[in-house]
Length: 207
Image (cartoon, rainbow, N blue to C red; front, side, top):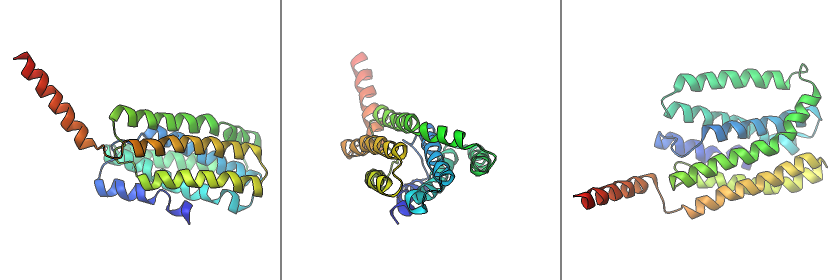
């Protein structure tokens, strides 16, 4: 239930604001790569659905967020192209055509993908001085979910590679959650107001 709803608040926030300000598309792409790798690796190894099922729902929601970022950025056609390309690649990765070694490599690549993806989003938050349209509810649910997955992965699969992936994911999600708390009272409008104020002060000093 948590995995089905985890990114729904983020999607609703984007639609309600009709803006994706503060969200990094590159971060979403890297997160999508990690989710897809986990899903493909689990299916290839015949792990029980309960050990990876949330990846399916996270994938659907993350793809939706990726499209919305492009759509509200004025690149709807690019967003549709993104959906088409991803669906095609997903079909190939999940098909018997793709060797197990490739899927395993994708899973191993999850760790740098997660780290870089979260660092990109954290950097975006830092530069903006706020978290924009990032949903606090989704961020905290992702953090709690990744922590819970560490224990369920060890119990249900015994796969150390997946367990380490979730440990790193928990740490990275924790960084974003900490930023949400730190920038809680900051907003894009407040940032703009401060920038305008400083410019007025500078002009006043010149004259």
